[in-house]
Image (tube, rainbow, N blue to C red; front, top):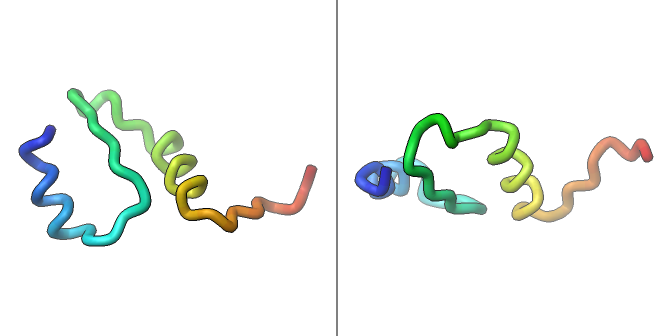
Length: 49
């Protein structure tokens, strides 16, 4: 999907992570959300332990 990389960067100019996928089935929303939260820092969660 590297052909789409330039288009995505035009739309999303600022991003916290960069992932490479060879097939759309590899894209998992929960995995991406977790990586973005970790990269963004200050992720304190709910406060529950």
